[in-house]
Length: 500
Image 1 (cartoon, one colour):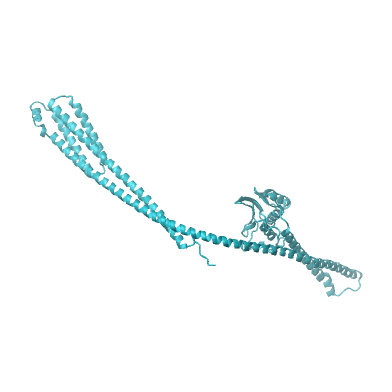
Image 2: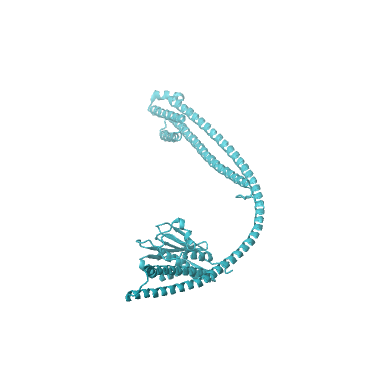
C-alpha cells in the first residue's frame, strides 16, 4: 500500500507549512495593526494635547488683551474725570494683566518666537505703568496738555503696540492649531487606510487558511478511515501473535521444568556416588594410617599421594560443582513455578510490605550498622507474594553490596503519578558501572567483584516478576557512588495475560 507522509496539519507537508505561514502572516498583521493603533493613538493624544495647549495660550492672550484694554479704559476715566475711584481699578487690572502675562510666559516656554513677544509685552507693560504713574502726578497746565493729547501719548502708543504683539501671537497660534488639525486628519486617514488594508489581509488569510484546513480535514478523515482499517487488521495480528507468545512462554516454562526435573535425577546419582567415594576414600585412608601405625608394608609414595591429596581434592571439586548445579536447578525450578503461579491481586500498603521485609533483615541491618529509612509509600492492588519477592531482593541487594569502610545508608521512598506507583531503594554502596546496568538483569550474570554469595538470578527474577505484574524495574548508578533501583507498578493491576 502506498504510504503518504502526514504532516502536522494534514497529509501534505507543504500545505501544513503554508497554513502555518498564513497564520503567522495573519498574526503579524494583527500585531502590526495593534502597534499602528497604539502609535496613532499616541500621536492623536500628543496632537490633542498640543491643540489644548494652543487653545490655552489663546485664552491667556485674550485675558491679557482684555486686561490691557480695561487698564487703558480706567486710565482714561481717571484722566477725564479725575475721580479717585478709578485708582483701585487701575491697580487691580494691572495686577491681573501681569498674572496673565506670567501664565502666558509659562505656556509658550517651548516657542522661542513667542517667548520674545512675551518679553516685549512685559517691557511695554512696564513702560506703560511707569508713564501712567508719572502722568498721575501732573497738575495744572501740564495736566491739561496731557488730557488734550492723550490719544497720542506714550501710554496709548504702547497699548496699540501691545495689541499688535497680541494679534501676532494669536496669528501664530492659529497657524499652529491649523497645522496640528491637518496632522490629525492625516493620521486619521492613515489609520483608516491601515485598518482597511489589515482587514482585507486578514480576510484573505482567513479565507485561504479555512480552505486549506477544510482540505486537510478531509484528508485527515480519509487517513483516519484508512488507519482504522489498518488498526483492525493490526489488532487481529497482535492477538494472534500474543496467543503464540503465550503458548511459547508456557511451553518454555514446561520445558524448563522438565529439563531441570530430569537433570535432578542424574545429579542426585552423582552426589550419591560422590558420597560413596568419600566414604571409600576414608576407608582407604584409615587403612594407610593403620599400616603406618603397625609398621607393616604401606603403599608406595605415588599411591599415598593419590589417596591423601589428589583423591580428596577431586572429590571436593565434584562436590562443590554438584552443589552449585543443584542450586542452579533449584533456581530454574523456582522461576518455572513462579511463572506458572496464579496471581492473586489484593490491596497492598507498600509501606507495610517494606517494613515487614526490614523486620526480617533487622539482625543484619544492626550487624552492619546500616541506617535504613522508609518513607511513606503508596497503596496498590497487586499480588502480595510477587511484590514482596521483588522488594525483598532490592533491599537485600542494597545491604549485600555496601561499600566496605563506609557507614551504610539506605533510603526507601515512593509516590504515585498518572495511575502508576513507584518505590525507590537508594543506597550509598559500591555502585555499578554504566555498561553493566542492563547486564545485571540477565540470568546468571553479575557485575563487579564476586565477593558475595549468589548465582545472578535475583534481579533477573525480580524484573521478570515486575513485567508480569504490569510494571518494570529501572536502575541509576555510578561506580563508587551508590545505586538507586526503582520498581514501578500500576496502581490497579489489570489482568490480561494470565495463564495461557
